[in-house]
Amino acid sequence: MHFVSRKPLEAFWNKNAIAEGSLKAFFKICEDANWKTPHDMESEFGSSNCDTIGNNRYVIDVKGNNIRVIVIIRFSMGRIFCRWVGWHKDYDKIDAKTV
Image: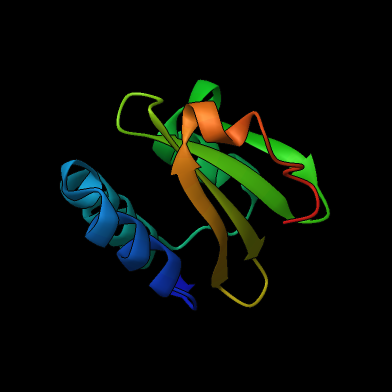
């Protein structure tokens, strides 16, 4: 998969050094993946760690569910677009379907 927008990940780990290792590992998993369907992605992360929220958007739990990443995935194109990265407590304050 091609991770189109890495900047939100970098911005988050630059402000939160404790998140850097987990987000870099997440990025590497995504870049190395060859997912064709949402099921392929769920097999990688575990179905309890990623949720479909509609409109090709997915929420993926990182760092033991302390960090949430919202991505748009175009499986047919092999592309991942990062829309939002934040702490779990901050996720509850946003509308994940519109960020």
